[in-house]
Image (cartoon, rainbow, N blue to C red; front, side, top):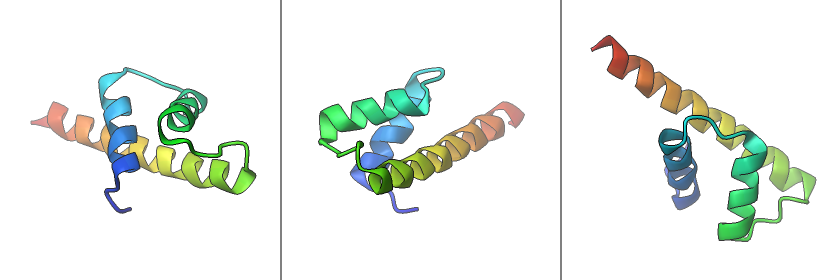
Length: 67
């Protein structure tokens, strides 16, 4: 996954807020980046990106906890 501006934004949201649902993140993306979330292909694309970001952040947290 490429580290685009939106991916960095999503990772920042996940890092800084204990838990945001996927829908809450989608609404923020729609508000700040004007993404057409109502289009199914866009919705599903960003849903997978959000889940990948979430996995990466949780992996970082586990590494930090182990050290």
